[in-house]
Length: 249
Image (tube, rainbow, N blue to C red; front, side, top):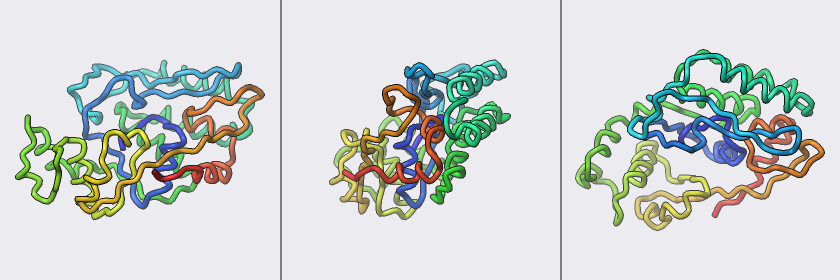
C-alpha cells in the first residue's frame, strides 16, 4: 500500500489484519490523494484538511522522490490547528506528543514523514504486524515494468488474461514474499479480479470497514477522518476493538 499521512482507521484495520504490511513508494506520485493530506475535526463539528506541502511535484516522479517544503511554517500551522481543536479531547495529553514528534521529525522526504506517522500510531496501539518499507527488493521488477509494453517473457510465472502493470506488480510482490493471501482496500474491488489472482495461487480479499462511530465532541459524528481523530477520543484498547469492525468481501 502507498504510505499515506496519518491515514484513516480502515488503513490500520488492514495493517492489523495481516501478517506483513508493505509500505510501497516505488510508484508514480499522484496529485489529490491522501499522500500528503488528511482531515481532522474542528471544534464546531466541521472537518478541516491539513497537509504537508510539497515542492516540485510531478506525476513523472516516484513517491520516494517527492520532497517536503523545507521550512517550519507549515509544521507550526498543522500543530497549532490540532492543538487548538483537540485540546479538550479525552486522550489529548497522550496523543498530542506523538503527533508533535512526527510532524517535527527532521526529514525532507514525504515518504519518511508518512512512514513515521503510520509506524508511530502502530506502536502507540501496540499493533504487532511486521511493517516493511524496503522497496529496493523490487527494483528489478520495477525496471521490467517500466517498459512501454509489458514483456510477458519477463514474468514467466504469471498467468494473466489482462496484463496490467498494477496487477503484475502485486502478484510479483506476493510471489516474492511467498504470500498466499493478499488483502486489498475495498476501493480495489472494481480494479482487481479474484479469479485472476486465484489463477496465480493468491486468495484476494477486500477489507470493508463497518459503519464505525464513537463519541467526539457534542456535535454530529464526522466519519472517515484521520486516525488522529480516532486516537484522540478513544483509548488504545478501544481503538483496537474498533480495528476489528470490518468484514472481508
